[in-house]
Length: 210
Image 1 (cartoon, helix red, strand yellow):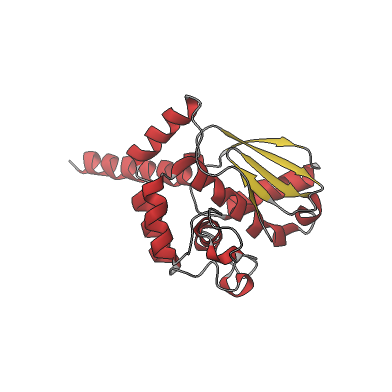
Image 2 (cartoon, helix red, strand yellow):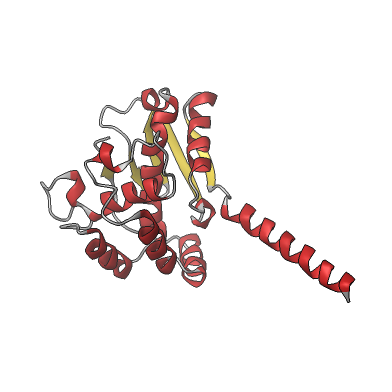
């Protein structure tokens, strides 16, 4: 009886270890450009965040090069300025912000965006109303909040003080709870199937000011 109880305990610990490992899994990435050190900054930034990036369906292509307009994202693609990545840890917040847009593009639906826009106090979700401030758009608040809520480090350039409170619409724990509700396992499985079928999600291009 004791042996059986001990075995159950060991198996429970093993399951927890597997779950923890899965939660830290990175997304599927491919790089277009960039030095090995610049590419490693992207990998390290994603590893610093506690968000489960493996939920993203398909492969995200990270384009690294000279980008006078700054970093931005489209569905399945992240564009990062090489000189920013050369700054090391300082760049990680921007990397996480752009990958936050991938969560929007690939995992959220319009109903989710309506909920998030209200919760984040945004005036518009994503550039359907031109001319607003960067922080007035829900998609930008969402990406900044995700970058901060899952990596609350003083080195994070997406900290509320650094973004003029763009990443502070909700307390981090409350934001993570809301995201967890929206990104339920059944929803992720459905999004993955649709993505692999060739459907597109979300807005086309999001130039950022960072």
